[in-house]
Length: 630
Image (cartoon, rainbow, N blue to C red; front, side, top):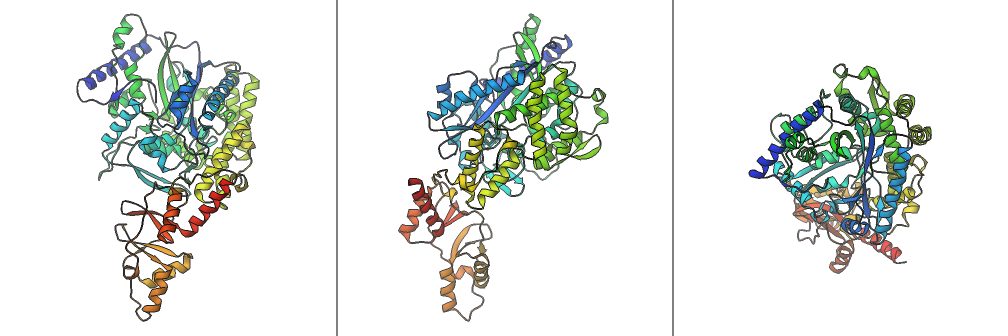
């Protein structure tokens, strides 16, 4: 999210001031390009490692700022949520054993943060989406108290004008409304930077777009969100939807998301910036006093702070970046679609694979983008995000399984690309062999998580499996083995992980069968028999909870009203219900049921039913709590 001091959009002087400097920056960039000032004799790589912090129960731990203070190291910075941090790795020249050097530094820095988090009873998880995360992490008390983050959230919500919505369909379906941008913080990535010369930028950017689908397909690591199996790389739709400022309408006006893949090949470097300024309103401004045109006239190189700030609020999966190193300006392509984890060596292998492919662009693609289908390229990207290693790509006009494309074509291309820039054969062999083994085994982070989660759910409830698979991921990350060597996690190893049961969501049932007030009791009785359940909530046609029918209610009715076949649920249901909210401690719910002598406790938000806990559930809680004590 960056470190610049900024404020929310101001319609007055500050906004006009910022717009003027933004336009100056764009003009200055044009002049820098025309004068040939962009660095071209050296190439560098860089990376940003986002990570999650969890407590002893493998739930998000809000100790980020405390850990950051303890580290006292400029390589580390905050992220949007209190349970996230980011590591900024040192840029390295693209040569020799740069990938091994990057892996070494990343391990050293992770070692520092591992040590620091232990002092706060927490630990680090590397994953695209934390499997154990739950909806409580989307509340504002989990947001890092940074003025920029608060301003960003306020403006995006104001521009949208209504609650945000998540609607993601996979094996399961997630439909959820939320009031702030904090669900974006569920995403953690390994963002990779590649410096590119001005002369090659257009071709390299378009090529980066073209290879995004197959690269993502072999690197997915985010199939789970709130215990639902969704896309192989659920980060893609989650990020796009969690900060989407577009509101619903009754028309077909086309409006792009601020998180996007793009809609066409680019033809010049500044085209992306011009399009973004024209299309996307300001979200953040700052009070920079640097007039980039005057700085350039004085013989110095401007940092284009306004342009970079605006660019930082438009989250393209391949994003152009301008920077200045030792007084020399440069251009980079930032790969933002690769997930964090599941291991350090997997991340560096992903990076090396991407850079190798970037350097292996065939000559016949140069200046030839008009003859290629951008729609196929964009389709490849979203197919990869949806189905990962099981997806198929359109490549050179043919439909090819992603794994076949990687093994038979892309790995050899990447090897040639790395050799062409002087990367040591040792590095090339080490990291590309990991990609090859991953493809041949068919096991990436997403497939491992999915298989492990399904296996655990056979013997655990959803919440327990979410926690257990997170713990298993952490255990294997510390082993330093790449993902293709990981064994599938089992319920047996998950049984050793303590569950906190500090909220009702960890035990309540959410897959509910309900009936309407006017439904016949005969139907209610049959549903109970069919589903082998003892309680059925009753709702009205607007989804408001109106009552509860129990097996005892049915039996009493059958004893008293044997001849009346048209009695409805409304006439026999319990109306004066004891209910609880979604943030209540599960142990409190258990004690409440014992105290009130009730066998079922509806969980509601407002008047709407969101879950149900029964005496069978509380018995299970008690057994597990006793086990935790032992």
